[in-house]
Amino acid sequence: MHRYLCLGLQAALLFAFPLTLPTATAQAVTVETVLPAGSDIDDGLVLGPDGALYGSRFGSFPSPIGRTVTRVALPGGTTEIFADGFLRANGLAFDPGGTLYVANYNTGVITAVAPDGTRSTYADAPTTVSGLAWDVQRSVLLVASYDGNWVRSVGSDGAFVDVIDDGLNFPAGIAFSPDGTLYVANFEGGRIYEIEGYPESPSLAFIADLPTDIGFLAFGGGQLFATGIDDDRVYEVTLDGTVTVLAGTGTRATMDGPGDATQFNRPNGIAATADGDTLYVSQAGDRALRRIVRTTTTSAEDTQPKSGVQLLAPAPNPTLGAARLLVVLDAPTEVDLVLVDLLGRQQQVLATGRLSAGQHTRHIDTTELTSGVYLVVLRTPASVHTKRLTVH
Image (tube, rainbow, N blue to C red):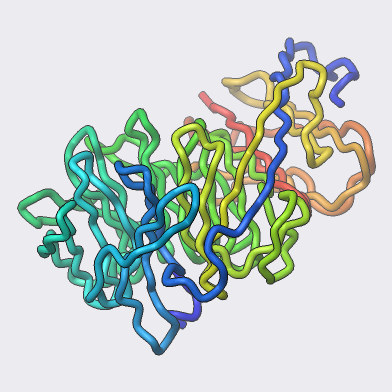
């Protein structure tokens, strides 16, 4: 979706609770251009059951209107128009039988395109439709409405059923994990949520807050990936809320290379392989299609995060009355350390401003908090880290 369319830890722990550091994972990230600027793809992406990539053409605002979905043979990048005649083709999803579902942003119509190219109207929403995701377990389509600020499911009868209709802010990104967990991302404000309890009793549970508006969302290799459409970066987000820049310097351009040196031009759609090792990103700025390749190596000795920042889990956890946590910095930096609830509403400010290098202990008073799960969120200019705290 586009904004312009609508408007070491080596020291002993300071408190007496055992700490087991996870084995760190190092990544070599490279970015290459699959289709050059000016392609027919600028929006939603999905990997098809035939192994090809499919991308939508939304178009620019107010014109021209994007009307096509393009099939991209992989790995080479040979293209063909798979279907056309849409009105701002947006989110895409496949069902296991190979039918492609296309969101027509302008009209709210969701079009089904059979493998043989036969088209039909699957559903007609009362407002704009953006992100799509197929629920394999229930055989229904999940739909995010950008203007409607809701997520709904819709079956073969075309009837919409509410999933979430409160708390979202222009949602576009929507994705399932292999175990059926549903995630959604706000375009505006950059917040990512798990829809807990789906489908029986769904509710929003805050995961992470990106420093930019989010184009789309993908799941792969046990974590989420999101496009920062306004800051020209691609992010990886662990399910405990740790956010890191996967690729992009923040300079708006199209340039290949290592992840920390490459450049994007309004990265928008995103699709990930199941292992998360290969991702595809569309660019709304110049309609180039990019590929991100992650080569992962594991070392038990490499325990420092790339950002040089560690937020250790609060202890005791669960807690009643008080908890302590530790922040470790390898260099002085500006921080914003807060406690929020699962909807992202701030409960306490634990630290703000510039902290020196070293270890910093902070105390959380939970006596005035209601029982439930909260998140400790540490933001620095380079990263975001999150830990959960359960209050009895």
